[in-house]
Image 1 (cartoon, protein in one colour):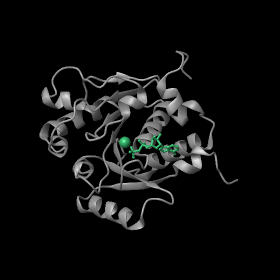
Image 2 (cartoon, rainbow, N blue to C red):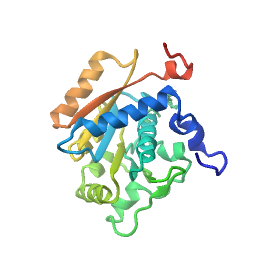
Image 3 (cartoon, rainbow, N blue to C red):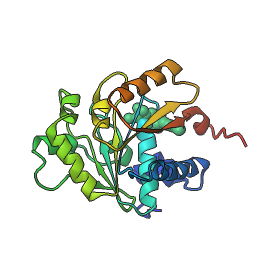
Image 4 (cartoon, rainbow, N blue to C red):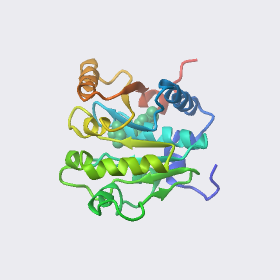
Amino acid sequence: MSTNGVHPVETALITLRDPRSPAAEAYRTLRTNIQFSSLDKPINTLLVTSTSPDEGKSTTLANLAVTIAQAEQRVILVDCDLRRPSLHTLFGVPNEQGLTSVILNQGDGELPLHATSVPGLNLLTSGPLPPRPADLLGSRRMEVLIERLRSEADMVLFDTPPVIAVTDAAVLATRLDGVLLVLQAGKTRRDRAREARRQLEKVKANIIGVVLNNARMEASYGYYS
Ligand SMILES: Nc1ncnc2c1ncn2[C@@H]1O[C@H](COP(=O)(O)OP(=O)(O)O)[C@@H](O)[C@H]1O
Ligand SMILES: [Mg+2]
C-alpha cells in the first residue's frame, strides 16, 4: 500500500482500499481470465465499454488496471471517453494535457503520462474534449499513438463511452486486441446487451468477455455466502 497519506485513488478503488475483499479477488480472477482468453494471440490492448452510462465501465477498468499492475506488469490506462471522461478524477490528476493534446500535437515529444500511486500504472487522461470524438479516435494519428503505447507497456487499457449511443467504442475496437463488455446485474436490459454485442460484432471486434457489475450489491456488502 502507498504510504503517502490519503489519496483519492485509495478510497475510490476497492482493489487498493481492500485488496483482500471478494471484489478485489474477482478482479484478480478477471485478470487471469484475460491472460488465458487467447493463448495464441496475447491480449495487450483492451477496451471496456457498456450499453449505457453509469454501468461501471471506468470503475471496472481502473480496478483491472491496478490488479494487472500489481502483478508487476507495466500498464497504461487511456481515457478515450471523450464525452464524459472520469479517470483523471478517479486518480486525482490534472487533465489539461492528455490524449487529445497528443493527437493535436501530431504525437511528437514525450507523452503526458501521469504516474499513479500504484507502481507500474500510468495514466493518459482525455485532455480537452474535441468536437468530434469518433473522428479523432478513428484518425491515423490515433493509430500511431496506439502502436506507441503498445510498445511502452505490457497492457494498454482504454476507457470508452457507451457503445450503443455513439460509434467511438466500435471505432476503437477495430484497432485493439479485445473488448470487455460491462453489464449491470439486474439492470442492463437484455435487448440492449444484445444490441451492444451486435454493434461490436459488426466491426469484427474481439469480444473476450462480459463483466457483471452490480453496484447495489457491492455497496451494501450484500454478498451471498
Ligand atoms: N461495483 C460497484 N460498487 C459500487 N459503486 C459502483 C460500482 N460500480 C460503479 N460504481 C459507481 O457508480 C458510478 C458510475 O460508475 P462508472 O464506473 O463511472 O460508470 P461508467 O464509466 O460506466 O459511466 C460511480 O460513482 C461509481 O463509483
Ligand atoms: Mg466512465
